Every structure is written in structure tokens, then in C-alpha cells.
Image (cartoon, rainbow, N blue to C red; front, side, top):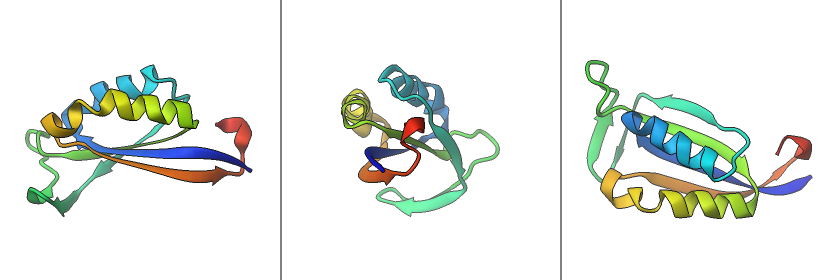
Length: 100
């Protein structure tokens, strides 16, 4: 087992290319994207907007080294307030260490 960092980023779907570019540019070898159908937060309830997609949320998940995790968080930091991102960072143990 090897220790890695799990990063999850909840973002507005139109920001996908920006978020993916930042994560990839920071050195992540891979990531998974998930569509979110709805939820509730500081701004109240929200749900997927199938007409424009403007209010649709998505989640990016990546597992990286601590150094890459720090680079990702630092690069995404300017978007926290302006675009309402939610970033989760947690320490995990990975069984297949050769993948990460």
C-alpha cells in the first residue's frame, strides 16, 4: 500500500475544460469525471439544467502524490470565490500503487 491524496473538485459544468486543464497541467496522470444531478449548498437547492447546462454541476476525482495535490489546490485557488468551486482533499492508501 502507498499513501496518496484524493482530490475531488465540484464545479459548474461549463468550467470542465478549465478544471481538467489545471489538474492535468499540475501533473495528474488521470482523473474521472462525474455528472451531478442535483444538490443543496450555500446558494440553496440546485438541479441539472438540461436546457442550457449553465447550472449543471460536475465532479472531478483524481488520486495523486502530495506534491501534485498541493499544485492542483494552489492552481484552482483563484477559482474558489469567483466560480464557487468546492475542493476536497483527503489522504488515502492505494493498493495498486503502480497506477498512481
